Length: 266
Image: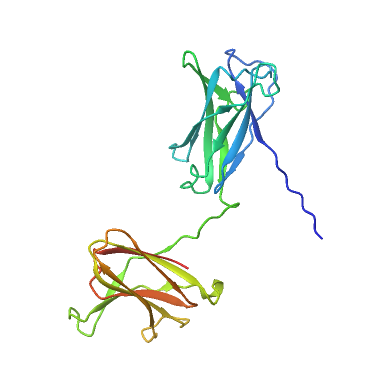
């Protein structure tokens, strides 16, 4: 039997408040790269010290956490939650900031810069904090998607080509580009989901599939299911099952400017 330990610890960072106006001694470097994970709430804990390395009373302040992406756009902003119970407690100078799952939902894996400043609860004056006693105020936080990778991106079908013996006849149909159905990762009950985004489209959308390994002009396609649309104003979902090599969509009416896209996920 293999034994592997895992650790449940606080993500604690020490910061320095220039509340005395200067820092002249004892210059350890506190700055370290923080890491937060997409798909879960991340609680960051901070300890606030002064120039003498003594905890600062945080009960008179509201800590402000701000994070910026590589274009210096503000992407996260939160108030800190004070943990200090009283001036003599072990939690003096301590506060937490929670980076929520929703905060990171639309942020891809990347490095962010963050700062923390204090707003006095009485006069609203602001005090900047530093990551070390060399007056470095910004620090780095990495957004990691490895712990909870999330759903795979959908394929987007946007191109249709008219297919008819005589272009423009009433019996014309339009065929989309083919999309891999990923047979290697699907079982015998493989579920496929599509969402049809349309605007004033009226007609049928036929899901077609093939078992061919390569797509050519002679590839045989089979109809899997048919969806009839009558100018829907919201995306139309469709689910179908089967192990296929490729899927495509056939429409009975011209989809130009009426079907904006079809999203497919296997």
